[in-house]
Length: 630
Ligand SMILES: [Ca+2]
Ligand SMILES: [Ca+2]
Ligand SMILES: [Ca+2]
Image 1 (tube, rainbow, N blue to C red):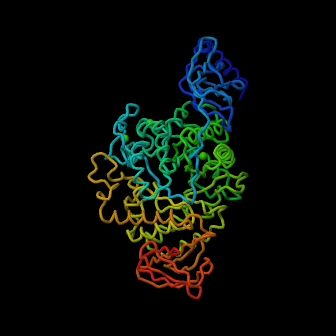
Image 2 (image 1 turned 135 degrees about the vertical axis):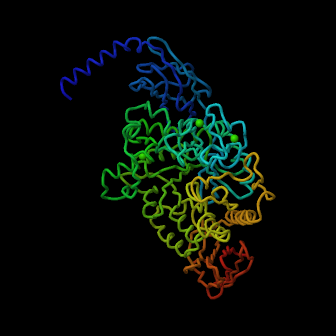
Image 3 (image 1 turned 60 degrees about the horizontal axis):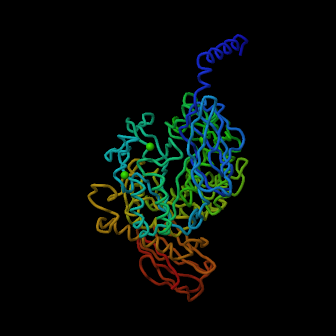
């Protein structure tokens, strides 16, 4: 900059002081929000960094009214005085309850409540999911409307319209509570709920769907990371849901996003630090989705930067996890949700677009506070080489992410090809043959459907017969099986908006209720009963959970494998051909001996016997059998 430029800036600066200076400095602090609003005694994280949002916070002092809570160090405000970072230490001997934070400057003070929570009751909470579970993905807005009073809330009027597939449809947390007995009956032991963060209260006029504004009904566009979406319920309703689910033996998995905020988050126009986002609304990179560059040892720097820091779809503000304040905020936010709700796991959105150096700190903080807790990351890719790169257990890009599990999309595509499109079945063992690339393939979350893809039953060539092969496979193979809501009754929907259709019977005025036997069509009930039988087998037969997977027979359209533990074995045989077939294969590697007898627990009830170290299995066209010892 030239000297003249400097002079001009100085003049402008003094002019601004003259106009706004003394009076602005003398204005009383106003407090709008404190994040987090509470913390518990005995946390592994202490002090807590509280981000206060308000006005006139520059140079303000913070005092605590009440005991057991102290301010550590000097609070730090952003330039516009709209945010203040304050470190608060919770005494191990504090009495739980509300305290007052008084924030003052020369002209006066403002205050806000802040709550010290009791030590966490860890019994039955923070359990982590495992291959013992059967997970079920619920899109909150589209599953069940249990409270019609929140369908058109005053905070965000006009976003509810069941005829518009991009608007809110009324599903909520009470609806999930109401359907827990249905899920229990189906054999579900863990429910993954799409994000419950407060999403924007207005129409999204930046992202047009079919040329028209849409809403954040899906939950992935937060405007507030510390509140529950008002269409879904409240924090107390959420805590009620988790506690009822836990009493019924069902875990809850929270869906989180830390890569970006929604387009209308207040930070976009007023960030707490200058580097809060990668770029600004006016000037940022667009995401080019060149994810292969992330593991390329010779990446083109710009491509990699555009992928890691570019704004999703050019409008989702990309959080800068290299800013230590952002890192601190996101870590505390995650711990807070787990601590105050009691959840058991996290499904993390857009995993690959966030640096491993951040993930290492984030996962370590979780495990320090909640050692059994587990996280599954979304890496939407069909390539095992690519996907496995993101699993923790080894350093990648300079840091071990610590990530437990991934959604198994490579296997998802193979499942679709084989069982929906009736292509060769051996694509599945070929995909599983790449398991050596994962640090732990047994904890991957396996699926035949999800909320970002068209449904299984809408694939070209799909049939209930195929669905009745894909489910037994997912529920007997290695990994943590996940069912997408409605797939158990063969719901259809060919693309992202239609895959998120309302569960029939979950909404006022629905003509039938597919949550009940009477409300299902014969075909739906047939699929439901079959899948229920399969989930029950998964829960009953322990080798289907923890057993080693041993391949026994592979041909173009037949696949047989065992799941073997120290104490038991189950043999699974699948025929994907439209013709019946008899296959014979060795079973000694599965620990079976001559004379051992096994019976098909899934369909035929037929018995097979081991002779000469082999079994002979007759399979009807497109059928599966699950053989367990008599
Ligand atoms: Ca509702
Ligand atoms: Ca909202
Ligand atoms: Ca990013």
